[in-house]
Image (cartoon, rainbow, N blue to C red):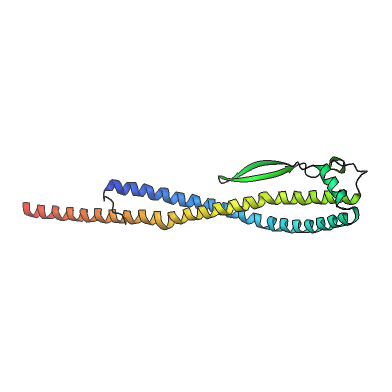
Length: 206
C-alpha cells in the first residue's frame, strides 16, 4: 500500500472518495445489468433470423436453378442488368445507456414487378419470381445486420463495463478502505499517546 499522510483531512478525503467509488460501482452494475438484458433479448431474434435466411436462401437457389435451366443464363443476365445495382440504405443510431447502436434500413428494396426495370412481356414468370425471392432474401439479410451489430456492440460494452466494475470493487475501493484503516490507526495511536502524556504531565504537576 502506498503510504499516505495520516491526517484528519486525508481521512475526510478518503471518505468522500469511498462514497464516490461505491456510487460509481453501483451505477456501472446497473448499466451492465441493463446491457445484459438487451443482449439476451437479441439472442432469440438473431437465431430465428438466421433460420429464416437459411430457408429463404435454399428457396432462392432452387428458384434460380430452375430459371437458369429453363430460361438460360442470358435471359437472367439481361433481366438483372435492367434492374440496375442501386440500393439505398438509411443509416441511423439509437442509444442504450450512452452506447451508440447502428441501425440500417434499406429503402424500397421489395419492388412491384412493374418497378424492376424490365418489360414484363420480355421475361418469364420464373425470372420475375427469382427477382422477388432474392429481394426478400436481401431484406432478411439487411434486417439481420443491425441486430448482429447491436449484439457485438453490446457485448463489447458489457465486457468494458465489467472490467470497470471489477477495478472499482477489487482494487480501488479496497485500496481506499485500507488507507482509511491506516490513517485511523495512526490517529488513534496518536490520541492514546497524547492522553498518556497528559496524564504524566498532571502527575508531575501534583
